[in-house]
Image 1 (cartoon, one colour):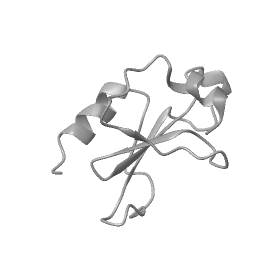
Image 2: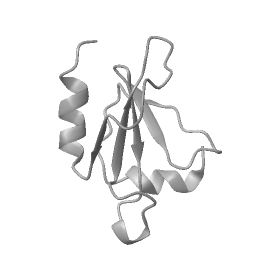
Image 3: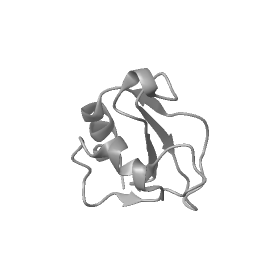
Image 4: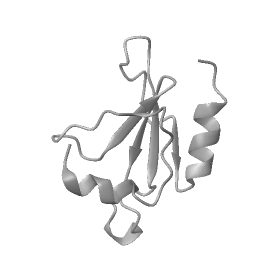
Length: 88
């Protein structure tokens, strides 16, 4: 994981149950929980790589992505709500 990525999410209260699965060759830091992968972009929208700060992908039983973005949002509460309200 790249050290500067901590700045991407230091303003967020990432749940302790989320696993940081970021790799140095990824475009952005990401976390996994409840069969979802959450990508987090920079908090400063002028410097972000994507139109939305949070991009969520659904994972299968082997933790492989099922399809493209499941949810794109700039609202972290929306991301939390989606992930916490899905069957485990």
